[in-house]
Length: 110
Image (tube, rainbow, N blue to C red):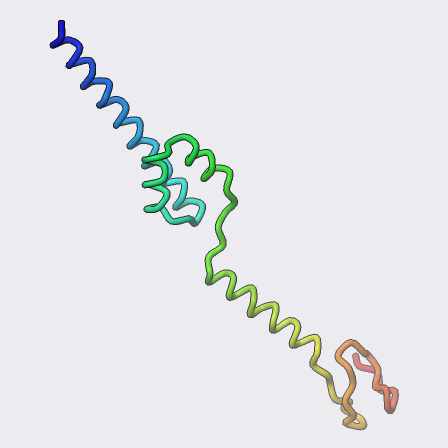
């Protein structure tokens, strides 16, 4: 009888380990899809299981540093373009970028 219990115990341990590994690999895949660290989430899902998978599933898509830098440069260039002034082709006086007519001679920008 004890031989049967030891076999059942080994089968139970094998099933629990297989389930934990399945959760870990699911966490690895989901983290890579969301732009998160797959290795870190593999270990988190292996040790914490379902709560870690739920946390990862509900987390937003990560934005990479490259995308953040590109957006920041784009915003800087837009703010820089807004502050640029234009020179009147007729009198060569400087005018603000948001104006369509020269404040000095009245030339209309087309």
